[in-house]
Length: 307
Image 1 (cartoon, one colour):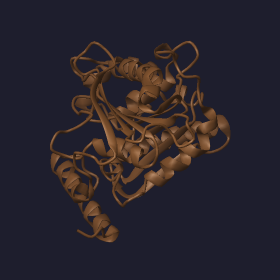
Image 2 (cartoon, helix red, strand yellow):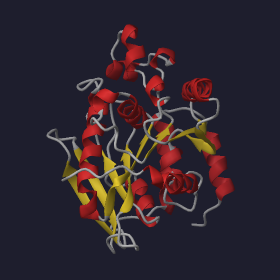
Image 3 (cartoon, rainbow, N blue to C red):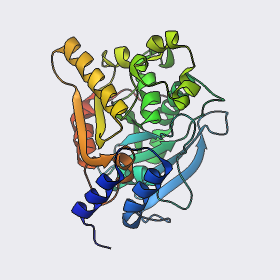
Image 4 (tube, rainbow, N blue to C red):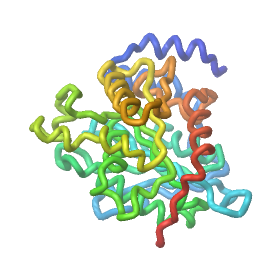
């Protein structure tokens, strides 16, 4: 099947900005024909490495089959945190290319890709997601070299609820080692940063709790302004309005603090789901910006953790 970007965009736009199961399925169907299927040529995959004690403390590591970087050093590592409205989601859905496509995109561009899964609400409310991200980052920093990666150049990327968990880790010192988050950069895709302004939908309440009096301290917006790691913020043109509002509030706070815009990208022709579903297809709407971000921030490398 030929890749027709105009036809694909038309189909995505026709789905609108809803987040219903039909829109999720429709979004996945649009890109499915253009994704790789297992076994992945030239890629070594380690499934279900444990980064903690819980059954959902698992991650998949994707590395180039030829080992380390061409210069003999380690490759940058992209650690991806899936979404799912705080109550569902996984690092990989068997029988589909998702979310393997994110880690594959990393490998196909000379990086190491790691997909993590995390505990879910309501059984595990706030701050379980941030704690899980912290544990996964620590694991990646300690074990990256075993997979051709550089534990000092870890890029954390999360989408939707995964972005909220990643943002919490970066924003709240309580979840970090004494020397900081240990990241070369963070990419936040359509996340929730200011809970005081977010609609109190059932899934968010399941994770953050029913008491609005706790929402300010559990928000990440103020901590993100401290710039503890270089950050790229991303929204989609067809994100639901509440996510666009979150981005605008973050930008406004950032400009007031720093006097200039943060790194910010609005993906035209994409919805809340296709922001990541299109990675590792001929559509490089996000990918080219990710590579630019990684290349421009490599100087922010952190000392790798000891195994």
